[in-house]
Amino acid sequence: MSLSSLLRVLCVTALGLGTPLPLAAQAPAVRWSGLAYLDYAYTVSSPSEEIDGTSTFDYRRIYLTADADLGSGFRSRVRLEASDRAQTVQARPTPFMKDAWVEWRYTESGHRATLGLQPQPLTDLQESVWGYRDLDQTVIDRSGYRGFRDIGLRLDGPILADGTVRYAAMVGNGNRERAEDAGARGKIVYGELILDPDGPFVGAVGADYEVNDPADGARTTSLRTSAFAGVVGERFRGGLEAFYVAEETDAVLDTGTGPVGVEAPDGVGGSVHGALVVAPRTSVVARYDYIDRAAGREGAGEHYLLGAVSFRPAPPIRILPNVLVTMPEGTDATMIGRLTVYAQF
Image 1 (tube, rainbow, N blue to C red):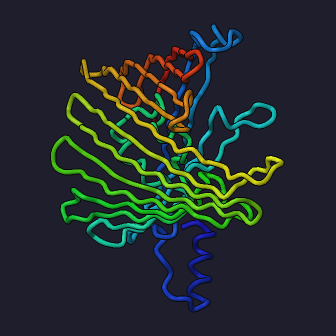
Image 2: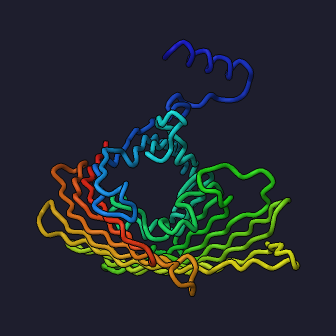
């Protein structure tokens, strides 16, 4: 026993605060892990001639994660992320908090509550079936309507005793990894029903509703609904996902002849993807997305294609030559060829 530990035990005992906790409970074991997405990217074509033919080596994501089992049904996670998009004014990487939560599993059947910065519910199953976050985000993340994470309180658990039907619900700030904005008076509520029966097929339906009512601005509301169906087998995995977003705002524009209400356009999107094992360590991956952030308006849609080959020379390493094609309606397409390396440690 170290001197500091001995002093803590003596002080607690001397002050009459009860029996001291065992040292193992005072200092739970922490498991460290990490991952990295490393890229070489070459721009084959784009709407800008200045960008055509450019190339770069970069890291897209680096995680450093600490997980701790706190005992009595409690566990916690703290995760830092470094990203090529988060930099100082000197263009140096700026790590930021990605996860910071405490979970309490309060029943033997699996009901649990999680408080803190964490993934929001409408992403778990979709991300798991997609399985290639090192290539790109799911279509809902790419749309930009919601963040993958939020700060709030989340509840999860089985509806049926065998766990084939589960629920997930959360109330959060709606501000992604950032703290609540000053003066913000709204929150976002998430809910999802997950179907995971015995067999290869899975599915989920969900919705979230956000109210933003700042003290010095217009009140806005947003309702997003989504549906997902997937299949996970020994050699093939794939999914079909769709979402719809309806927004309303009290904002007005002064046109000089009087105030005019602002129309908030609806948004729609969908994705279909699949991955097929063609050899013991090799898979081929294909995906198509469509996102329209102003449904019904000409030229607001975007088509997206992804193709890749995944080779795993060792369990924690994945090498993925891949091609991304983004085709906004009304402009030229952008094609990028990449070599991506996924490393887990």
